[in-house]
Image (cartoon, rainbow, N blue to C red; front, side, top):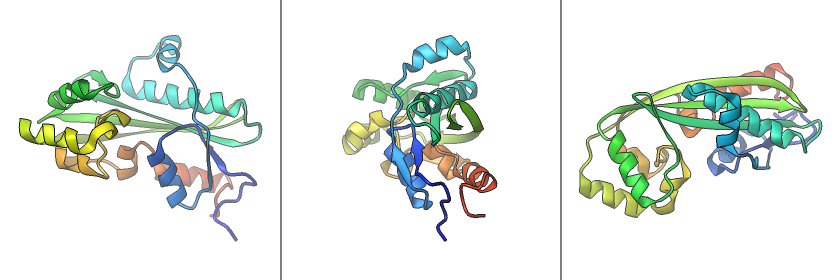
Length: 202
C-alpha cells in the first residue's frame, strides 16, 4: 500500500525547488503549479502587517489562486517572512541589496516565520505557522564578498539571502527551530494533518 492515498498528487502552489524536494523526499507525489499573485496587493487588501500574519495570508492566497484551477485537488500554499527587531525583509533583488541585507543581519538574531495553507476548492482545510530564530556570526567583509561570489544568483532566491542547507550555513553561529521550518515548509505539522485527514497512510 502506498503512503499517499489521494487519487491525484498534491499540488504545490510554489516555484520553490526546496519545498518540492522536501515533499518528494517524504514520499508525497507533487505537481508544481506556482501561484501568480501580486503579493503586495494581497497584503494591502488583507490589511495585516505582523510578519506571521502576512506569511499566513500569502500562503492562503497562493493556495486558493491555484485551487481555483484545480477542482477537487489538495493544494498547498506556503510563504516565509523574515524580521529583525520589527523590520521585515524581502528577497534581495540584486547583489548590492543582498550585501546590505546580510550586513544588517550580521551579528544579530532574526526570525523566520514559515506558514502553510492546505486548500481544496475554496475551503481552507489546514493552516499552520512556525517560528525559527537564527543568529548570524560577525563575519568579515572579505568573507561576505567571497560568500556572494560563491552563492551567486541563489542569494536572491530566498528571503534571507541564504540557504542553510548549502553555503549559507557558514553565516551562522546559532540556529533555534525546526530544520524544515527554516527551509520554508513546516513538514511535521503538515504530514500529521494529512494522516489525520486520510491523505497519508496512518
